[in-house]
Image (tube, rainbow, N blue to C red; front, side, top):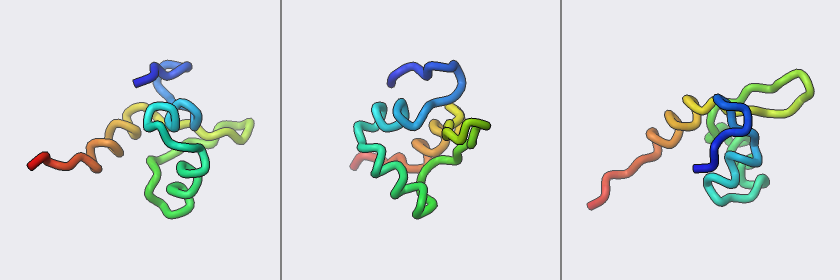
Length: 65
């Protein structure tokens, strides 16, 4: 996983790079309510807390058969 640039939060670009998805996919997930929780910072950009990202990933974990 790419290390967050600001320590405890991921940018949308970092999130997308970690999952190898296009930013458009992230925004589609966000519109559907399936993306992790986000914080809108004063300049309008979104950030994802690392703890929310990890919790979101854990919720999608499947047990290998």
